[in-house]
Amino acid sequence: MRESLLRCENPNTSYCGTSQGKSIEERYSVLVPLNMSRSSHLGGGFVRQTLAFSFACQNSCFGRKETCLVFCLENTTGDVLGQQVLCVKICTCPKRDRNQDERHLESNKCKTPSIASEDEESSAKKRRRRTLPTDVKEENESNDSTDVQPVPSDWEVTRSLDGDYRLVVKCPKKELLLQSIEGMIEKTAVELLRNPHNIKIRQHANHLLSLKKSALKLT
Image (cartoon, rainbow, N blue to C red; front, side, top):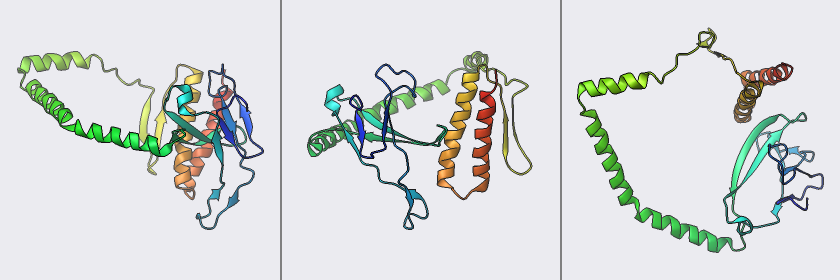
């Protein structure tokens, strides 16, 4: 806790990670159990909990770099069900910094005409490219076509009769396979939060979790 930038008022909070951590599991993180949650009738039945955070340093302490809080919703086994990123600015005088940011935005708006002229110049270049001779255009197209690789015969993207989609791919590494499955789990979890009563999305999420367990057993 002494080395963590973020503090939480929840007494059951756990502070994890070290300064030498490289992976996401080893970096500094604050683990807050949702053991004081209760359903709110005003929120449409969603579970709500208020979390109070504080910071031990300001942005000026580490070179005024942009700061973001990454909130991850995990289950008891550590699977990420949802993720949300919140940009924050830690400062002593928020009003002063807000005024400075607004003046900076106003100055950028004054530079808009020059940017527009650059866009017009680029569009003019594109028009000149369209007027190239036919033989030059065909030569460029033939050169570009060599960069396109054909899709492997054992890869497949189809649509079933019931309207669902089916994807068959191969991964060269187990780590890449797990990362691909975790990415699908995160996207499905976000969609499930938006549509909590959709049975097909819930089944798809459960199938992905089972798929990840099967992939972990591979050698």
